[in-house]
Image (cartoon, rainbow, N blue to C red; front, side, top):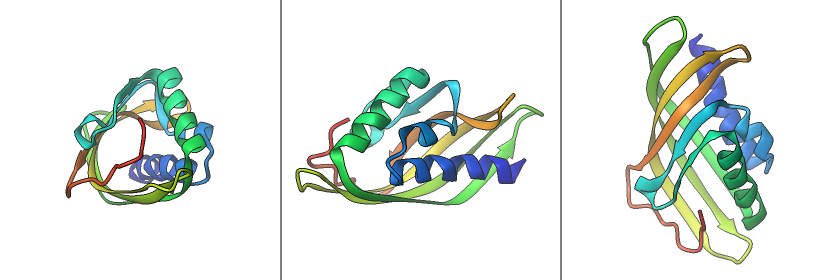
Length: 136
């Protein structure tokens, strides 16, 4: 179970970094929440809104990477869990702006018929984010 939850967090990062919004979205439950308001971006609810953001992200980014590590996962029940992990992301927009964020992901997870998925993610800065030129 823990390996499946961690794999979901890595699938999200891989989808973003391969500019494959649907792969990134596959890590999330259908009614998930993705909230990056603490780092100056926005909050999205449900697959439609989250996919729209991931697609816009893929269109505006020239290069990027996401390293997700330091997972702590706490099992709440047979079908739910919560935890944290760190993310280090850096890249450039197609307009030439650079961005960098070192943040804490606070996640909840749910077991779906397709396996473990992220049901909510709140991204909070660990160091001041550099988001100039990045549009949410």
